[in-house]
Image (cartoon, rainbow, N blue to C red; front, side, top):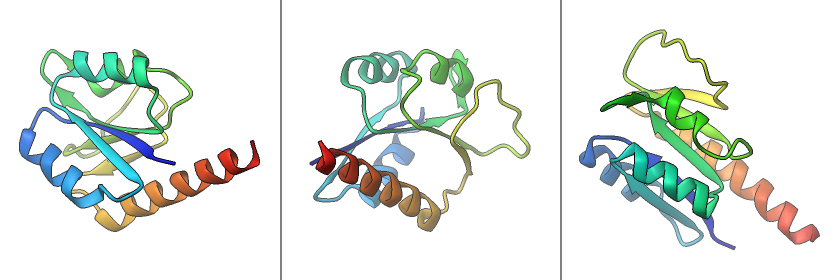
Length: 120
């Protein structure tokens, strides 16, 4: 079973780095640099996990998260110190990203998802 992740960041280089770092045989990373496109994809495809950059052109991570399905875990990615959010994110990652901690989140959620699908 493929574990699908959306990563939204307006910086294409960071999208590429995230995809290269965390893609695996059973993990698909779909990156977006446009909030509108990421929102549409999340609402149509219902990924397993979403990472959202806080500062985006014309919007912010709070607004994006609120426009996506509420049942999907969402993690905020930000370069800001002490960012205050309106949306209750599953967690917040600072930039530069802590690869070990992100890998742990992905691994834990992917394992939980597989365990749930095995019981069906």
